[in-house]
Image (cartoon, rainbow, N blue to C red; front, side):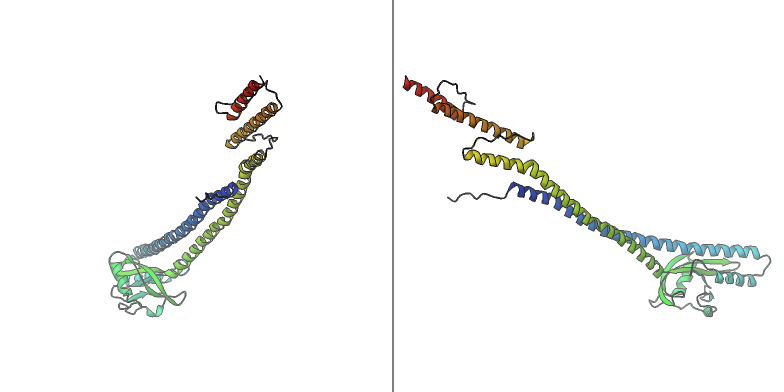
Length: 329
């Protein structure tokens, strides 16, 4: 029969392993969860920011269009009593042509047959019929302006040349009806999406910076975890390893016949209870040794008190003096 193999891994190493697993595993889970949460939050924040920016851009161009419609109609009502319509309408259209908002915001006006009346981005095109104008994706831009206006106002997007950059860019436009006297036109304004993309990039950069700042917490957490592990090792070493080593040393001395050591419990936990039991065992062995020495010297007149009914050594010592007394008698 093969002898049972004994795991010689020390308690200290086991405790260190348990501590490492108990601290590092939750830390790794926390770090992975943090990174996942940051990525998820970052993506969600960018999506929310994009939607909010687009919504704000739509609200802005709709508001600007409605303000221009209201102001133009108010001007007509105010001046129509003193200026003829055929002279007043060109004055109002000229005012729209010269009106700006923000840095690059402008308005355009079309007749419902497609004639350009106001085109501040390219004045040379005014007076031309642009009903069949379409962008490179096939969107019938002017027809869409007219359709949205006839329906009471609405949004649509298309590709258009940006006068600020001289590049064709994605544009979102709001068009609405403009009723002046006996005439009705399509008026609108828009914003170019690359401007929104630039703003979204700034938001992404800010979110990325926040993510990087949060990720810097991971090394700090690792340092704290390492410190906790080191402190735990010192703590376990003081309250567990040292007392057990002291008991082991004492047990080895007893095995060699040395019963002179005195050990005192330094705590009231299970290790302390074990130490007290060990101390009582040493005291008992010392007492039995003293009894055996007296018997060996012929002193048979003392009383041996057994610790319990199973105290075989005391019972044996108590029986032997009686037999020796009988033989002497």
